[in-house]
Image 1 (cartoon, rainbow, N blue to C red):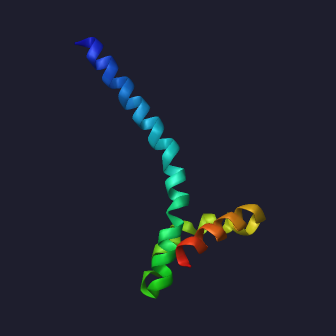
Image 2: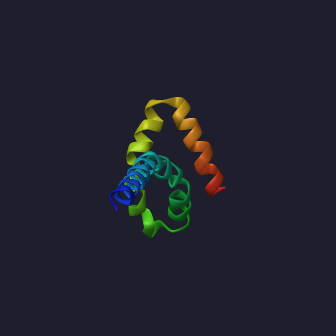
Length: 77
């Protein structure tokens, strides 16, 4: 019984680590679909608020700005 609990605890720990690693990636990748929605419907402008840190980062660092601009352009056409 204790062995099964240890295996379950290890699986939970691995799941938590994966979530912590994937959350920032999913945050950055979600800017494209949100930009597309905001571009199509101005009443959804509030959806862009969580992405202001990415916009600031894009303004401060040109390579990041170029990459984000390219990615958003893929979604917005």
